[in-house]
Length: 318
Image (cartoon, rainbow, N blue to C red; front, side, top):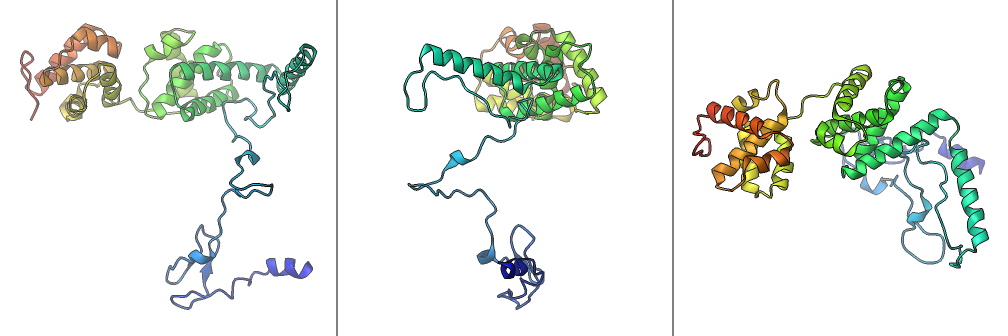
């Protein structure tokens, strides 16, 4: 045993390995793939798999994925590392629990949930993360976006930015920031429809939190709204591509300075439908984009003037 440990701790234990191409003994075993430092030959026969061990030591065959727990997640106040008792009406053998056993189990489950929360700070964090998960689910946001929003909220709690503000407003602001960081176009109006607070409060809180946390987010390009607007209006791929191409012109991009990107994107989509001969009214586009018809008309005229297009009978720009 001592001889084996001595051999493992020996710094010259790899001297016996020789490169099969150039004959060098200078082999790098510390990299992801063992390779020769002289000629760069990768020693695939000496590679060690550092991934999960999928072997099953019980009866049967195949991988046993039940041996690993769930990964750490920022959507839980404790990272999801503690044990969670799920509601149950049957025991381990499949038999239904009696009424007294169910009451006892539910009582133990409540006590277990209380022990996971140590103080009022964690209780508020649990409330905020539950609201974040609810809001993200209603907006159909993917899990990475929600986890990023949870990380931003936890940073805001550490900087004491939640004090004096509503939890719902800070959560909505964090979700808006996470959507913009992950290039997912979600306007304040869309978030306000599902949140328990108003659009103005979300906007004020968003600016304050981003400033205090030092997070710099570039304005959302109008082209990112085109796929969603096209999907809501049931437009085909060529029309969507034409709207994106219109917004890709440098002169059109300059029109977005100081204006909302949704209005410019909606106007480009409306112009693309007219060029393609697809019947979509300004009211239809306005409802899909969440802007007014006046905004679409103004941006539409500006785009046509910039690209020298006749607004009454538009044609595709050259």
